[in-house]
Every structure is written in C-alpha cells, then in structure tokens.
Image (tube, rainbow, N blue to C red; front, side, top):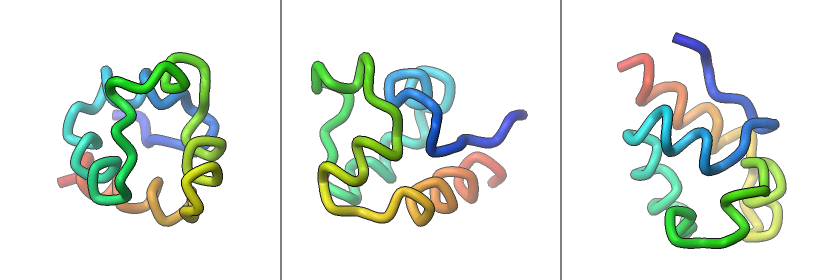
Length: 66
C-alpha cells in the first residue's frame, strides 16, 4: 500500500486510511469536519496548526504499516 506523504490532501488521506484519524485527533486537528480538508494538503494543515508535517506523516505511516 502506498505511503502517505505531506503533499497528499487531508481528505484523501482520511478516506483511504481511516486509521489516520487518530493521528489528526492527537494533534487537535478535527480535519474530518473542516472545510479546508477538502483542498488543503497535510503539510499546509499541519503548519497552520503549528505542527511538524514530517512527524505526522511518520506517525500515520507507522499506523498504516501496522
């Protein structure tokens, strides 16, 4: 399965990898209901919220890989 990258759209990530929701919630990003999730990529969303997008990507991919 393809790894998540910070260039991927937030909504695409959650739709393809629902287990990633836990990471977004951990960082206080309620991305599921956010209008910006439809057009914002993970990097932009993380930076707006003051988080390191690379750390989030690593955590999401670790969950996906099991």
